[in-house]
Image 1: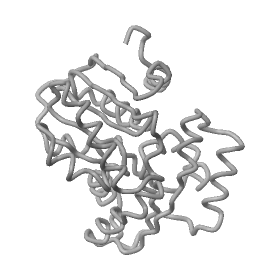
Image 2: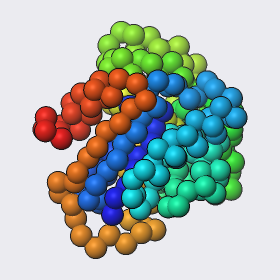
Image 3: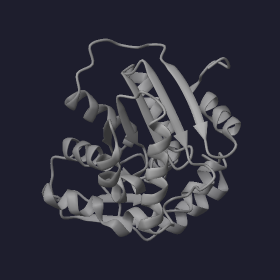
Image 4: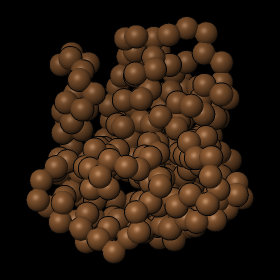
Length: 251
């Protein structure tokens, strides 16, 4: 199978990393809308318009499946994309909810959702978690993490100060949904902040779990072809991808 992965920037590379680790696809086409990142501060109509423009880009490739590796897109534009796509389109919100349900046995567990302002405003996570019996959910808009991650600051004083700003008055959660695909890049720092005593729900692993449940994969692909595209400075995206995904230069 050939899969497309769409994100507003570099965050979707965390999903690509999980896809590579599980060797699911023969070819991966990645597009990051780096010229217009972040999506999480934009209104719904703009998010839908940008997402449909990205969909048109992927129609140039004979992909079997498109993953919208962006929680904001998944919350606001998924149905519109599905209506216009000639291939399956899946988001990251539903797989994240399923992974949370599988990870937590106590419906009273304290769940913290970290996401962009737009994703939090959509109430997508709270609504779907409540439908599955979880009533102790708090969502926190943590959009400052996105530009910090885009700058490659995965540790250090700036990140720590930002976590203090967001987390210092919160009750210790039982689980944290990393509701933006950028956030797994700082997962270790977040876990450390909460004394490594919290369950983290990672979009990439949740997507893999969802794919293996809903699709049939007949063989492994240990060395898939990968193509990276960006709306601005694609070379910078490729360099980040090579570093984060540990890819050889020729890819």
